[in-house]
Image 1: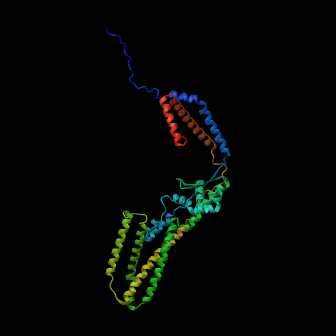
Image 2 (image 1 turned 90 degrees about the vertical axis):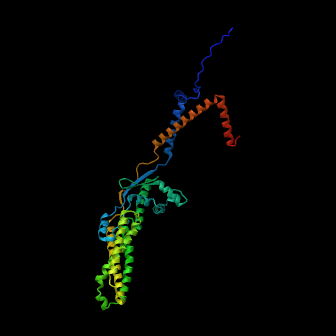
Image 3 (image 1 turned 45 degrees about the horizontal axis):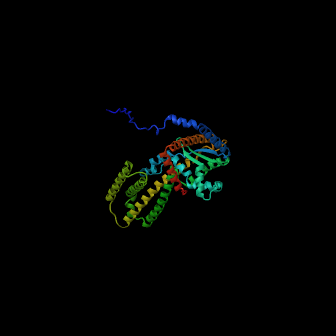
Length: 396
């Protein structure tokens, strides 16, 4: 007799993961259960933050704007036209691609900051022990930036609106003092460079003149007419020296593979070749005539250099005097009427949002821990985790 067997119920091959999944309804339920905490908590913190802002001393920000010195292009063009072999030298003294960035760096320099610290006794005002700490405090209270319009803006902040305006305007005053000690503009750079070259050329000219006088003048030397034969050679040597100075200056801002640098080298080689041919064609002489002609050639060489440098030095001085006011203030800083911070509404809003996010994260984590504690396996894991924390803190 065949025993009766009950049919077996089909098993569900899918894993039972429903308990591990968190649905959107579960999240909404958690939010609904803790709605009072999630609403009242952020509101209370936002109101508390708003109340604290009323106890904070307000900060005022004064703003000044100025236009940095403009480069004189007309003087540079005139120099290039009249200098010849030294024409490329002016390019070494031109301004930066963005001159405003240079003046921002000047304003943030230690020289300007230390002058402001000593002028307003900022170590005492900012309650710092060292001047280095006062520089850091000054940098945070004075914001300096160059705009796309070419103007430089200085924002000075302080509890006292009068002092904030004084600090902003003092930055421009100290910048002017610094620029009086530096050669910043193109004309100033050219004037300093040619002033040094002119001084050296003058000394060499005096020595050459004394050597020429010491050689004596005789009838044979006069018959040789060195003025016509030697003057051209001396000017050619002076041009070669000028070209060498130009190449030395170009190495500071160009690579040797640059077209302008290669062209300058080609011109120098051509002039040297011309000098070599001229010296070969020059008739040989001996005795006092040769000594006189050589000294006369040196004299004309240094005289030509002196005239070149004197001419360009005077041009640079004229351009420098034509620049007028170095710094042109567009907006002078005035004591601000409204405070810049704290921004009460912004502080309250950010505090409310941050607290709401933190509380939302807290209720989700708490609900997850409660759900995990309901299963034996998760409860055991939580127990081991708590014991590990107590051992790490030395409370085991």
